Length: 168
Figure 1: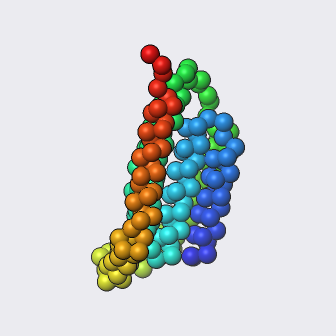
Figure 2: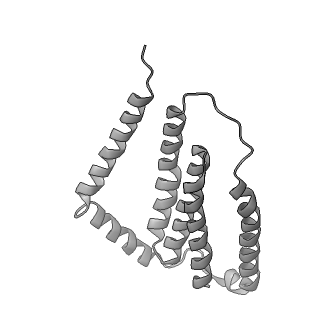
């Protein structure tokens, strides 16, 4: 089961990354990056790093992608051209979504008895250790790179605002 998840979401991440590179429209590229980030979150989750998976969804797929879309909209001050959508999204998206839905339905229906008897709360001692380890490393040994990254993001936003500003 873990191998199937890895193959499916690894291929989805690879396909999203390739679609990111081949898109002409920047918003479609940003949406492809969301697909990559969500696929990576599933891969983190399947490896037992639940905290990293949640952080991937909240921070990267949420906040950073909102920032990217904001900067794209800010820099694209000209006339917006209407498109009919991505050809790759039509060719891969609908069959891919149907395949994932069928796979999840099969797993849930075949493991119905195990799902009904499972403890939803689970054993949180491992999750607490995972979060404690990540936070201890992030705020002790990795504090300088963490803060430098936040300053670089701030400088990138200010640079985009300065570049997009029109002369009065």
